[in-house]
Image (cartoon, rainbow, N blue to C red; front, side, top):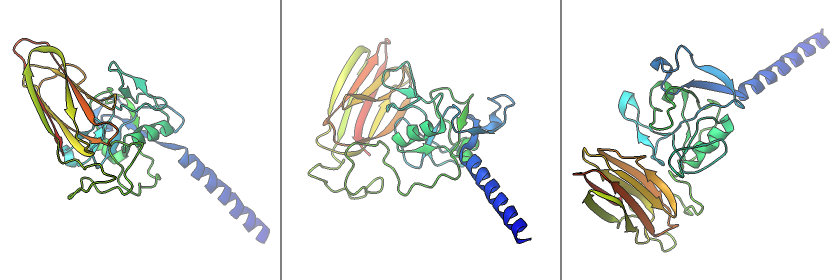
Length: 280
């Protein structure tokens, strides 16, 4: 009798281990526009092996590269889908230096979001339309949702990971910034420019040794213009073409360069634009 009981317990233990392994190797994929949007046809959310390939979107409580602040439907997070940091599986876009996560394994999606200082969006964020982000056309495609067994991060990540992080990171943003290693914290940048019709013009912004969060703000009125912003030789923001209207983009400068370059392209007759770079 004891032998039979021991055999049953051993069998149940093995089956439990198999179930756990299966659960660890799969997670849910959901239509990027939310399953209620019908943009994925009649296809409901489904479980997928983590070695399969799907799109990805990243979410965070803090802003990160090209992210959008979600405030509708009770959302409070930031969501994004375009990156300027290449990693495995990412696809190139029509804009040099920007990449889209169209077809990634789950591990590749984790790395993609981690490089942005974010995580894969959760099922609740996707279904609640808190993960919708412009670019890459993923509202019509299945995207990964965060594996609910993934441990929660131990600290709020920086919005733009750097090679030389501060020795003692502070909460975002610091209420009373202090200098670290002789580099002044952001608090002294206030550069603005305005103009009209012209072909490509580049403006140099002196960061004056500052590090920290800055705001990149533009106003194109109703006649569309184009902006591209470069830092440390890399494209960190682009409107992706001629656009009208106004937008503010937060970005973290880490001291790798003391210059930021803003490139404006305004070919239309009668156009007007302005932009401002300032500390957050």
